[in-house]
Each structure stands twice: as structure tokens, then as C-alpha cells.
Image 1: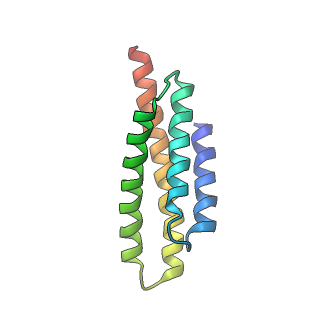
Image 2: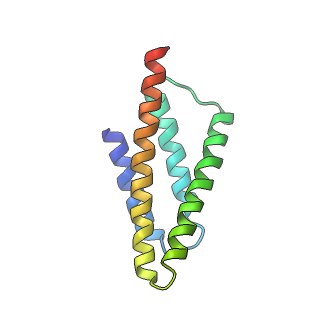
Length: 111
């Protein structure tokens, strides 16, 4: 759990400083992939390039969709839109980390 919180804080700081810059969601996607690989290794799983690639594509698609929705809804108030990107990034990384941790802990207990 501590590891997930560390990644969540990093995501929040990253989103805070890069929110107004277009295209920086790729940095968050890279952070999320790194977190997934890190959690997999903690649970003694070695992810191959294929699994990492699928994860990267899925995360990029979901994060882009969330970002587009947030930006479209908050187009008229840019500062609030930027703040919402930070909140979305923090929540997404936190819940993703918990889901991935739960997934790998369940898989390692059945192996």
C-alpha cells in the first residue's frame, strides 16, 4: 500500500506541474506502467513486453478518454480544468494501483 501511495503522490505532483501543457498525459501513462511492473515484481511476476504493451495501450486509451471528458466539461474554466486533471490523475493511479495489487496478490495465491 505504501508503494501505491508513493506512486499516487508522484502522479499528483506530475499532473500539477504539467496539467496546462498538452500531451503530457503520456508521462502519467509511463508512470502507471512503471507502477504495474513494480507491483508485478513484488508479487514475483515477470511481465513480458507483450503484457506491458497491452497495458500501455489500454492505460493510454482510458487516460485519454478521461482527460478528454474532463477537458470538454471544464473548457470554460481553465484553472478548474487543470485542477481536475490533478484529481483525476491521483484517483486513477490510486485505484489502478490497488486493482493491480489485488490482481497480482490473488494470482500469486492461486499459483
